[in-house]
Image (cartoon, helix red, strand yellow):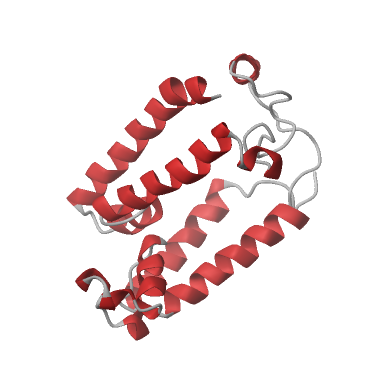
Length: 185
């Protein structure tokens, strides 16, 4: 396996996350994607509609560079660093995915039965993209942050609300995976 397409071991990736977090703490910043959306809305003039968006967006503009880096990094990883061989999945996982209608599980990282342009305008695609997007947007606002903000920043700061939020994320993920996703697919 090529070093570019091989997963990085935990003992490399974990310390890299730690270095990023220590650097962010050193400069007095917080990490999370949902706060960037708030900054973008504020720049777009949302403060005229809601007091929630009346913030000093110039102090949070660094987050925009972070998001651009995530987009560029995601593109590079997907196009140039994704392995060409099938993903090694547990046979029970393959059987479960086939039972709910996903053909060729493990063939790619994102199953085309869910993530494809052809699927976007179907009932299933609209449920995933529109309803899912609204629920994620509401959830990040209601929880005062997203999974990355709570799980990485909040837990590393030993914040009780972040622990509760992360436990809720996991419970919600289990419910969706085992109860809701089989019905939708």
